[in-house]
Image (cartoon, rainbow, N blue to C red; front, side, top):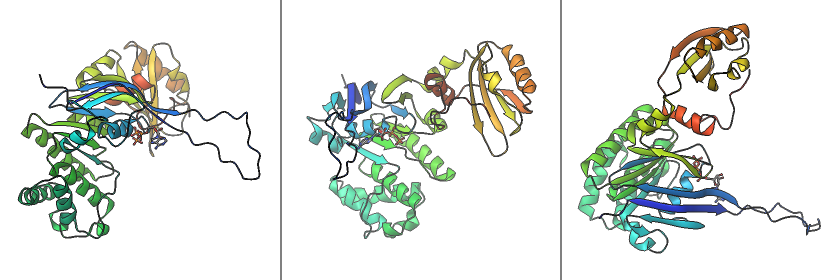
Length: 346
Ligand SMILES: Nc1ncnc2c1ncn2[C@@H]1O[C@H](COP(=O)(O)OP(=O)(O)OP(=O)(O)O)[C@@H](O)[C@H]1O
């Protein structure tokens, strides 16, 4: 039987916290405790099947990159085990490396004095891809990201987004069995991000044995692309399922979006009403957006009444279907992109 594409058991990674800086004239304090290690990954057990497009969804600092670095042999775990394509990422790293590839949206790899084509060709040759095949793949990939006209440009002359697209091409040129994409569309314009998503989907369909692990902050991207995904926060996996099943978990709570005029009144009382399950707020330049999930449908009347009594001016209100963001809020207590901010009062 084919092994799982990725399997981790109790995977843990701690980082050593640096000691507080001490001036040379100050005396060492023998009572000062050594700083505790920081746990970036905390006992993660996951299984990704061959052929899956699997997502890791979590806020900044959740541990996604740490996990990807361990799976791609760039970082050793502190405890636990990880196998990729059946191979142990520590003991069998050399055998594993030719089968995988990794692209990180934020990285700036490549040689500035070489042009785009030369950089990609060099990388393909390091992986042993024959020149003719490499040339064909380079042409195809540059076409997909709309950079055919930049093939002869030195990478030191590229914009940040163009560099990122070149790196994206690099990930596919070796035709890896298992590919790791860390935030592939971070900061790209809408059209480029859409082209990349379409390509990723087509690439997966082309050969059923390919596996792709993707991290993203973008809920819609995770929802659109991933067969299954793990929601990760503070180094722990909080949930792992298909996007549809995850959303089903929160479907039992009727969900409303309410737009308020900014600066008018208070919504704090609404969040504390009995029957209100969760209330989160987002402030836009023109409105304050409330998202309220309820234990029971009729509670919406009480919520609106509390808002009006508090002096808030309701602009629009609609019932909505849950998104992955709502699953995340349910699990973590705040939105993916708004830090640890609790539902707040004005
Ligand atoms: N080399 C390091 N030394 C110390 N702490 C580190 C190191 N690398 C990462 N960390 C910490 O480990 C935690 C997890 O970081 P990681 O980069 O894995 O998160 P992430 O989920 O990829 O976040 P982001 O979405 O912001 O990229 C963070 O709190 C980070 O500060």
